[in-house]
Length: 102
View 1 (cartoon, rainbow, N blue to C red):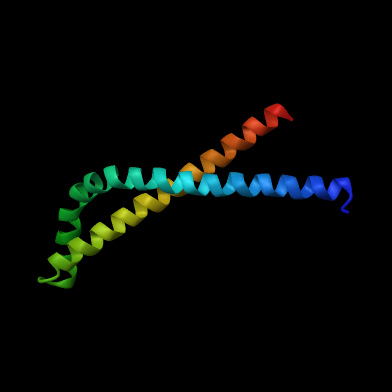
View 2: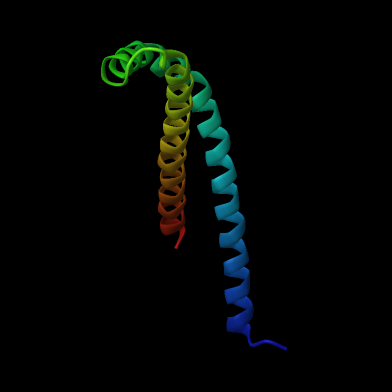
């Protein structure tokens, strides 16, 4: 049989694991929603400039592939930035709430 403090440690660790997996899942879902709504707006405002830059510096004929790659880059940037921001905010919020009750 394990001593009381080891049992308490394992319970605390399990609680943190559940909390962190929930934070990661919630962050992913919210980041997908943010990327879904923000990607078209950011893409439409920047794709013309990126295509013009590409044709001026790399030559003509790359506009279609540039547009696709730029869409992918914008979507990934928005998703990962949103996920990092949201997960940080959720962890800090969870810690702030936990600190109030301790």
